Image (cartoon, rainbow, N blue to C red):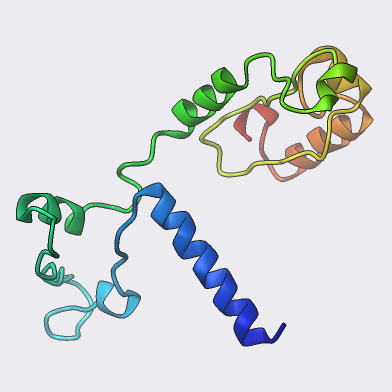
Length: 152
């Protein structure tokens, strides 16, 4: 695979991701920071493009000036929804050898997130992630960067 086709695939994947989130357009970065007289300071918001067919003008104005993440639920709501949907998950054969679901802990809106590969015996027993020897090391690493486990 050439670099161009790989980059093209990545761009298409990102666009699909944003489309799935409900994003229908993204403002050009070159235009986003322009000012009226090319001086720093007053930012000019470019006028919204004309409404496309099938989109009401009032709806389009709302879309044009809103953040692409306005429609996305909060991290807390999203994680609660995912956990509720999981229930006592039996979607694959791994449920037969586990005791509990190890979903997550900490701040769902934190700036830093750790994703583990698979729960070990300690995690499975307690239902919490990163509680074994590797979890103790992770706690020390988090504390070394001036944070607490409940913040991530």
